[in-house]
Structures are given as structure tokens and as C-alpha cells.
Image (cartoon, rainbow, N blue to C red):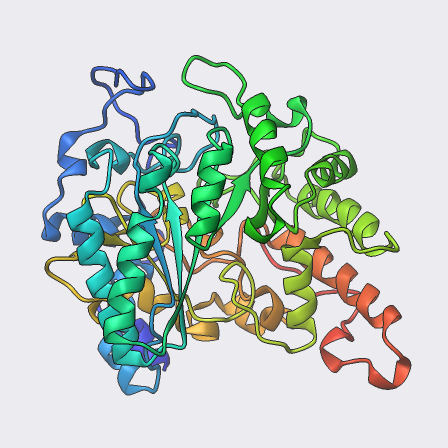
Length: 470
């Protein structure tokens, strides 16, 4: 397997210079009227396939020049079908959150996207999804309506893309069940929209960074006005429809008190909370990142202690439940931890097929594949080096990660967090120092809670982990 991974273009000689992209991909140029963001170089936004490959090779040699997909297949790494399809029904947003990976980080490709996915593109997406579900006899596919802000449409039109997929799948793969969720900033939730989504069987997830205005200071509109009031009103409406309420996603903010953030979110009665580490990497580290410090572990563990010892489970916290499941050797569906193969594809408003959106935090075009609904199937996406690398499990990880006793739980961390400019995605997570104490603390809690005769070996971790270099 090592030969398959090293095959391809030769490694750069030791000490050779590596390119370092700017922290922001925005270049000089006229401002965009919608958001006043400067335009990047048009040549970047209209790459030809050869230029796209060259850019991947320059910024991310792993996997784009160091992974031979054909050799990996011959060595026994089989592709895993796509099971989650993210439909970018809108490419623009009514908010201008200052940390948004779509608009404010390295990739500015949103500027070149049509504002709206047309019915024809949605129909083509439905055909391709149904084709893939039938080819792999999938028991279920999950749709996520995303943006931008997907609720920038009338209630009557919200369900149209989902209806198209369900109709196509019913014809081509009748045994496949289709689930659907919309991820929204919550500011446009109304009774009419919630009713339309509920009638279509589309659950609603909301992004909010805490239950108080101060927690959401970075979530503002294009005029700089706070979005919290409208989002809070939307969430209170949604909470009256628990069958339609998927939960809340919250980006960790070290400037905010962790327990206050958690308890304030509980006022919206979320069935689950997703605590997300800020998208960051070795070339663009997260706020508060310093060798020898673990501020994100400290923040998360304060929430864990309150949640774990609450007496009554008032909500699910996905990050903690995923760690516990992995410690117990149970399967999980997350790509942020563990070694589960990636199984998500993104369909942009223009019908282009991309990798996970979170890669856009790394470099311009990092999620691009050069594939479109008109020219490629999702089976062809499976052999794209970027996706194939994320299905290799342990073999895709840095040597330190492969040797680490926490690898089955951590899985090297979230793929975008491993990026270093000019090297690619084969480093330990930039959050490695935080993930280790987080996992160990939760393992100790699980071990204490379990009867002595049933302690799983996965939870019995040494107190002093081997050092991992930053």
C-alpha cells in the first residue's frame, strides 16, 4: 500500500521551497456590490482542467501528486459510494458572517456561481443521484439543502429540489429511502416556510453561535447589523415543531464562556447541538493557537462536564456522542473524527460537482473536481484523488497519526484541519494538541461510568500520551 500512496510525481527534495498562499484569496479589483468584497483573479475562477490540476498539485501534493488511485485500488482499497448529497440551491446569503468559510476564507469561487440552482440543474442532479443509488443498491441517501442561504426563496419552491430527487429515486431505485435537511442561518424562518418544509418531510438545522446576542457578534448582515434577533425568532418558531427540528450548529468561540454558550442554546430546545472547531489549518492557524496550550480542549471539556453530569439529558451533543461511540468501537457517520470513509458530494448552483465545502478554507479551488452533472457520474467522482484519499482510512494519515494509540477515535482529525500549504493534507490536525486531552478525558468518564466487568478496552487509555509535534 505504501507504494500506491507514494507513486506519482516524485516528492520534492528536502529543503525545497513550498508555496504559501495568502490568508485570504481576495485580490485587488472592483468591489462586489453584494457584500463589498473585492474580486479575485478571474483566471482562478474560470480554471481549465489542466490549470485546476496544476493548482491542486502546487498547493496540495498530498494527495494530488503522491497518491496513485489506480495502484490503491489494486492494493485493495475499494471505493465507497456517495451517501450524502449537498445541494447548493442558493450561492448568496443574506448574512455576512465574518468567519464564513464560503465568503471570507481562501476560496472565492462563490462569485462565479449563479445565484440560484435552476429547475433543470436540480432535475439533472436528481437523475445522477438516482443513478448512483441504483448502481450501489443504497438503502438510504441523505440530501442537504445548503447555500449561501437556501431559504432565500418562496415557501412554495423550497421543496422542489427534494421532490425531484425523490421522484427520480423512486423510479430508478425504489428500495432507497431519501431523507432531507435544510441548513439555514434561521433569520428567514417563518410559519409559512416551516409548514412548507414540514409538509415536504424536510428537517431544519440552524447555525447559531450561542443563545445570547453577544455570542453572535460575528453573525451580521451586509450592513453590519446583527442577525441574532431574526434568528432567535425563527428558532422559537421552529421549536414548536420538534418533528421538523434537526438541531443547532455552533462554532466554538474562545472569547465566549463555554457553559454560558451551552446553557443559552438550551433555551431554544435543540434536539442536538453540533459544536464545531473553527475551520483552520497549519498555514492559517485558529485563534488562540500556541504550542503547549489546549484552549479548545479546555472550552469543550467545560461543556462536556456540564452536559455529562447534568442528571437529565436535555440535548445531544454530537461531538461528544461521536467520541463515545468510537471509544466503544461503534460505527459513526462523521467525517470529522474516526476513520469512516468520506461519502459526501456537493452540487453547486451551476451543476458542478465538488468535494466537501469545508475544504474551501484551505486554498482557492481546493474543493473543485473539474466534474459536472452533464459530463460525469458520481461513480467517476469516487476515483478523484481528493475523494479517494479521504476514503483510505489509516493509510491516508501522517506517520505520527498512524502510530498514535488514539487513531481509531481521532482519525487524524477533520481533513481540512490537516492542511499545510505546499504539502497538502497529510499532517496531524492543527487541533491535535486539543483532541488528545478531549478524547482522553471523555474516555476516563466513560470508563468510570461503566461497570468494571464491562469496561471496553478502547476506553482504557494511558495517562501520558506520546508527544506529537505541532
